[in-house]
Image (spheres, rainbow, N blue to C red):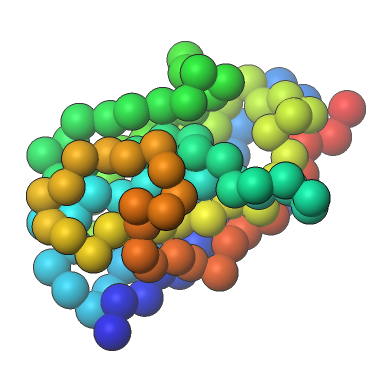
Length: 125
């Protein structure tokens, strides 16, 4: 059974930084793409970043240059380093992964099969 557990969310002032972590279990982590989405109440889940099994990355335009996704296959963990945080980054952040191995990093939530429980990130002024 695949499980994804996020951690690292919290309250931070605008301009600050946070690093989110997602620990995966239940299958061979290195074979699968990983992604981060975020959601605010009343809105659809929004793509943030994704990384392939080979390490290629993709970012939403709104976070490009500020956020960095990375993975440590030895630790079964994917990270999201968030710098220069803005009020608009406030959301629940979800870690996700597709069922198919070696898939490309999709920006569509419907292409992902496994989701974590989410971690709240709040950016204050």
